[in-house]
Image 1 (cartoon, rainbow, N blue to C red):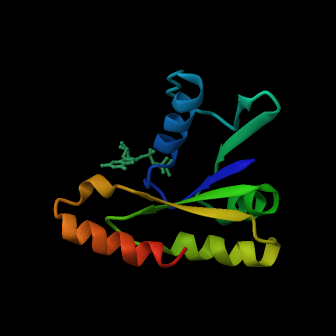
Image 2: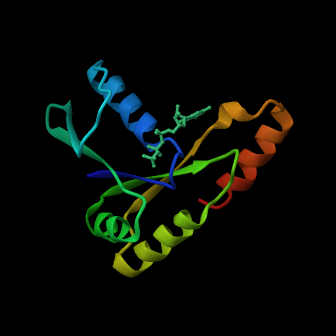
Image 3: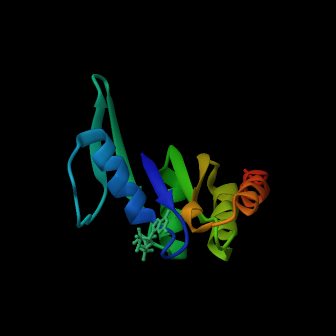
Length: 123
Ligand SMILES: Nc1nc2c(ncn2[C@@H]2O[C@H](COP(=O)(O)OP(=O)(O)OP(=O)(O)O)[C@@H](O)[C@H]2O)c(=O)[nH]1
């Protein structure tokens, strides 16, 4: 079970659609719940987008094997990220992978490198 967690409008649905397209070559426009994909002969992966509320975060922290924690790089860390990490500490930490989005918003390459370094340092 792979959970996609992050603040509102950070690009969770966009990432999920891109992952589905990568594995299945299908374009899915409206995603209503968890999506299970057969990724190998003996492997299935279920992707689930986590709603941006505390109860969903608690539920997902208990069952996820891997969490993709999305951060809008043009904005920085938001409260929800820290909230979710605190919840994980209480419920047993799943593996967490940080994903930076909106990197294309940076026009200045130097600024992009600096921001990436600062944000990566946290994971
Ligand atoms: N420029 C840019 N826009 C992005 C990126 N990722 C997502 N977006 C845009 O951000 C907007 C919100 O993306 P969604 O995928 O709907 O975000 P979400 O986290 O699912 O939003 P909620 O479900 O409302 O929490 C969309 O218009 C996307 O096109 C990115 O990496 N760069």
